[in-house]
Image (cartoon, rainbow, N blue to C red):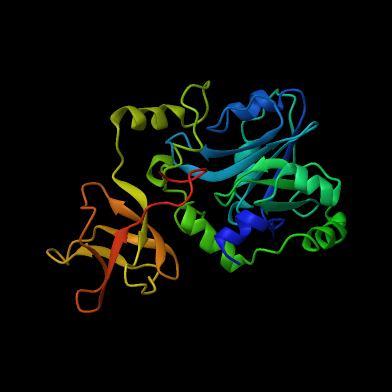
Amino acid sequence: MSLASIKEHGGILDLSSRVKLSFTGNDRVRYLNGQVTAKLTGASGVQPACITTAKGKLCADVFISTLAAAIIVDADAAVAKTLPPRLEKYIVADDVTVADITHAAALIHCAGVTVEQLKAVSDLLGLPSARLGIPGCDLFLPNRDELPAIWQKLTAQFPTISDELAELLRIQAGIPRWGFELDENTLPAEAGLDRTHVDFHKGCYIGQEVISRIKSVGHVNRSLRRFASPNGEPIPVGSRIFTADAPEKDLGIITSAALSIALGYLRRGAPDHGLFIGSPEARIAVELAILVQSSPVLP
């Protein structure tokens, strides 16, 4: 299956292993607006957002699904232990109840599938989203016991997206991932998340002062970029980036790779051509690649 095939025929991916937190109560929109970088209006939909510390560094990158009776925040399973206490920490007198529904609920992402197509197959309403950089929709199932029957219906109509293909699509689209490009030391602007996950006109939230200051300064010390090997050579993860003129100087590092394309951080001031990875003795030429998608991705 290819990117073109998914765009034409669609594909489905089971994301039920992601940590999922349900927020209910009359103050849920107001409370979460004080915790996340995106602006929540209460309207139905799916939004990407960051949750940051007071110093503006990431606690998690999340997707926020606004449903009729609850708001669901989902994130990479790697933050399953740290995200719930972070989002519960500031509840004092708010009418907000948080429930960890990670194991109770299921989440399916349908890439290249419209809400109308999903409803025709499953008779269920999805929410538009683009988790892999391809317009599609999410299907949230409050009861995971419903997953096998729904999955059978969907796979009869749409092919499944393997983890390997999902990773390839993610890298092609330039989407950073927790544990690879993102961790607790990452500033959103370093990974390009300030362009897709941050609303600079909303009210106050934790970390806003630092994130707004970085925007006004206009730069960070490193930026996430997409690379390609012009000769089609596989790009090893963890490779340092350098130039032939100064092989001893580290200009960055490769953080994710799939075949001959990769994501990695490049230091501010580094050239945009003449780049190599590996070692001076066994080096592989790489070049900055043009991204094939535009949302939610790096420019």
